[in-house]
Length: 326
Image (cartoon, rainbow, N blue to C red; front, side, top):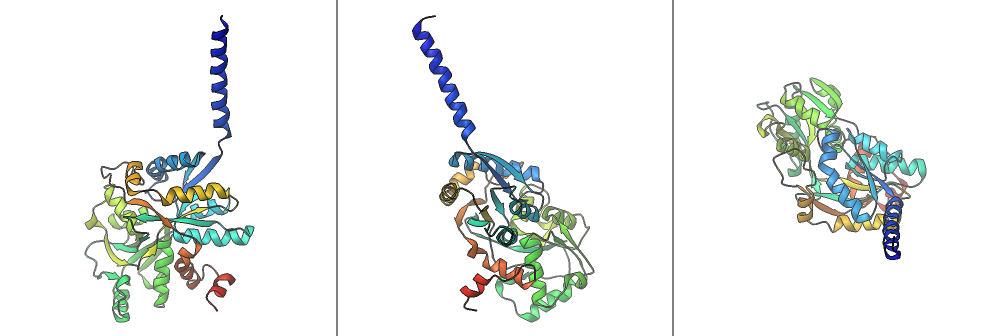
């Protein structure tokens, strides 16, 4: 074998070794996404291309976990099973509080999700068609008499709440009912809680329950996925706008990586979101509605924390009271 051939072989081997070593040195980041599709498998399919793209921007390898409840994603972050998570607002607040108490270092929001280019969404109560119940939109600041009439009319029906970690399926409707001194467990003809949002919608469509809590994004997704038609699940109540989901990081994550992640998210364009097909899986509808991310920090979720304090699920923090001048 000639010397030149030997040199070529040695160079080739060294190149392969360098690629292998570089690959082995890439850190593995554990991503988590809450139940944004009816099943964890559906969520992974809908969001893995986006997560894989994020990992490439960060020059890391990744693992992706999709949970079947909003409480689940919160618990996974608190127990340090995840590094970065797409979390519901209430799950974020719960995780932020618990991590601060347990470790004296808090899980932190670094961005919020944009849906149709807006960083908001709504809690809704859906029901079977033709219930004797008007539509009540809390964003219009209805008179108390109108709200009381709606509550009286709704009492004859059964209702299903989602899991206790859900913003729209538990926290916000609970705060609404408490505002008017209503205990939903006693008010409705029957009450249940703990269902997934997909299960709540399915129960309404199948006639298993009259009313159920949900959020507008989930209803839109299920309709797009042909799970049911819009006239099979009618919106009878809608909250005022809520801050959208948080992208949150665990305490102790490399601050350079966190800042890079923040910049990548904030610079994502609607066109890139469409190309990555964020949130789209197994449907003929390929119009992406998760169109980007906006700036956020813990204060972005103050209204959610206040609702949690109001229903007695979290306590007020000293720093919040000081910032209020209380």
